[in-house]
Image 1 (cartoon, rainbow, N blue to C red):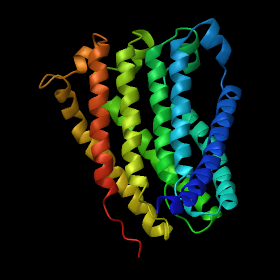
Image 2 (cartoon, helix red, strand yellow):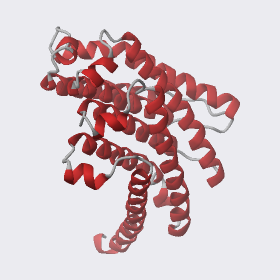
Image 3 (cartoon, rainbow, N blue to C red):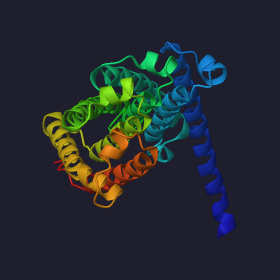
Length: 300
């Protein structure tokens, strides 16, 4: 039985290997696009200046891109190899453009008030790097959710991906502005003037966690009838955001078991507390994401 089924396993592995090679090629392309569209020189920042802030920034971008690319692999094993490669290539090129656009949008609407290039290159500000790295992860998670689904044809798949990305991006900006509005301390002050890496890690993790929640809302989104399913998806994403925002303060209490971690992180720059806080935040987001992902959406 094992011998008889072995050829099928090898065919499956070969199919997957070819798809992975295309995925790695797209990741390389994204890396080149990143280098060409930013003012920072990777060699100078990573080698000459040993700039850990830039390393966090670039690492967050590559990880976010890989997460997004994983969405292009969904369901590809069921397709013939050549059509699967063509569809994956088209989706991959689209997501590279959308992720780069997402970073620019987040820079202007979420991380406003200071120059990321100057903070990362001149000041080696790890707090700013954690923020932009978190926004990269959030963008990748949103695109992963937008790509992880079924559409009747490549054109509709690309259209649905863009529409779902727009929904996710809007809710991400709203959620980030809520954080800045409700926080006891000004995140701009903490990052630009205090160089508080712990506060940057907290905000960056919040963005990544919000991306995880939004992926949960988007991954089950049908787009058969845009007038019906578009608003349904938007409401589900809003519900996920509100649920996460309500539970988020409990995570701060959970970090130090009844004592808020906010003062330790924001006032004292306590990285140890911020790391635990990050784990708790992602844990809550994971629970919310899986909870709303299982909410049935009427496709009739």
